Length: 492
Image (cartoon, rainbow, N blue to C red; front, side):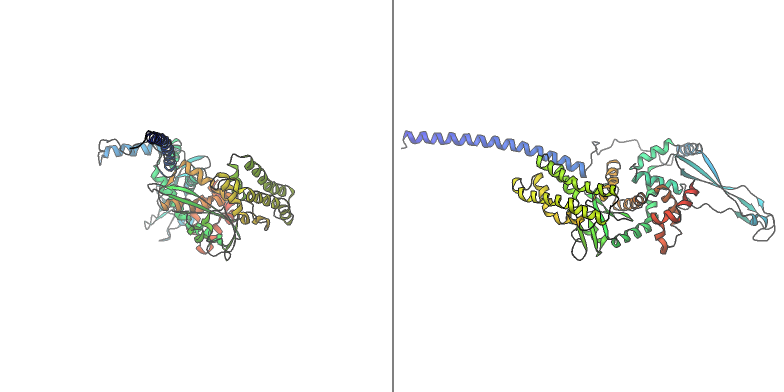
């Protein structure tokens, strides 16, 4: 038999274990609640990035079936549409028959030829600040002797039988990609101007323009590997009805800006664009560029702005001091521009005298204090980035043509990011590629101070007959000097 002391000890042990068990249960409960909150927040963030944000239910209310082949309803809609279009301001564009043709019939030689009622067709065109309807009037004549007909030259259109002019096409594309106005909003704006046009029609116009300018885009993309210094970056862009993100990459040089759409973020895209080319690639620390930044290919130059941003996001006094030290790098760049020594040997010497010691001091501080912060904390990640990327970050100290940051690429991706907030997604991969092609031409126009509206309106007709061997003449910087002035005068 156990003694009373033993029984008391057992009771105390059981009570202690029960108390510990209750404490552990309470801790599990608290942690479970925290885990639920974190999982819910994570799910909301995932939904915001890749899923639908609309609260509309998937099921739709049943509507009464529409009557098919309702001739009377179709007639009324057609009459209403024609009435609205007839109220638009119109301009007549004459297409006369040549005087020598009217004087003597080309078929029998008799003359003069008699006039007939002209042949007319409508084309909706965009003039600066206003929408107009061009009424193409093609003169027609007939020979009284042999009955031969002659008609004035047909207007040159973007597509045969099309109702929308090249400037109208250009306006739709520029408004969507540079001004980030979705097509459904452009439909509303055009309606206020008096033109009722379906969104599907604007979609067709958008993709038609992309197909026409593709040869120019391919030529631009082929020029990138030949440039010594290339800036690159990427950002996400959702595809409709696809549970994954697509990506828009930018590869910018001093002469062209190109965007490339890819259904993933792998290193295949940089390799396809740059190939085995040599030179310098200015990028952040993303590993997707590792394939092309190897000794036999391109030298990797880092982005000090990216490194600075990691400290800027940390609420810590040490981080704030490091941000202030980083600012010295851009002070050197501003002073060089103000002194007129930008991109000169004096500028490089100034970088080495001031920016070099600044970066070295930041790196040394990170090495010394990296044990004071957790490796997965925001400060720890910022310090590790500087230590691991120190050699690429200091590349601009050896070559004055290299920028200390990759802000050029980040600025170029802003129109993609802003568009992502407005038109939300692209329909499919081909739509993403078309958007990338068109954005490349428009961004290159901005780079060379070319009016993208005038440029696109002109080349949509010109590219269809321009020799493929001379496609280089249609790049924005070449077009500006060769065709730009004449195109602007003709549009006016």
